[in-house]
Image (cartoon, rainbow over all chains, first blue to last red):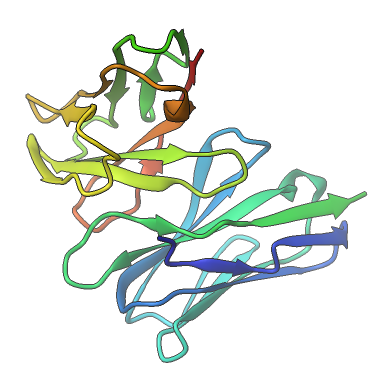
Length: 112
Length: 113
């Protein structure tokens, strides 16, 4: 069963614009992680946000977490063609479970 | 330093054969995870280890699947009597702490004919 659900399933924007992707999950968590995957290749770890954090930044990435709504968002600012990829959120269930449960991902396309 | 490595990168096998997939985690990482990913989907958990101890194997589909990590480093995922439905990308990840970032390897693409 899937814990996280990304929204939208697909997003197409112009280069230079900002892209926002959302993730909702069902249970209480320890952490939420975001990953990028280019064309079926490897999963690249982007950022981890802990359940007691509300916002985290890494370069052009900004992640927010709202545990009361069980949701997270990933913002990519000043998008580039190289940002074209699928983006997944993954959560671990509070209580010590280490396994990650992934959503189906958001397919982001950056048009030049 | 080197990332997570997996071998082979591609494996084609005939139905009924056994296969062994290898994962070499980042040096010093205590936890190792196996996932399976179907095309267009996110990875699905199979099993994980802390050091050499298998902590959770609830994601293994059936008893044809097994995994080991005997010395707390390299891990092998074995699939016996492969079936076509086993065809998928098998991904390994490792983390330096129990609830830390999980870093993924390139995966092994398994095709059962």
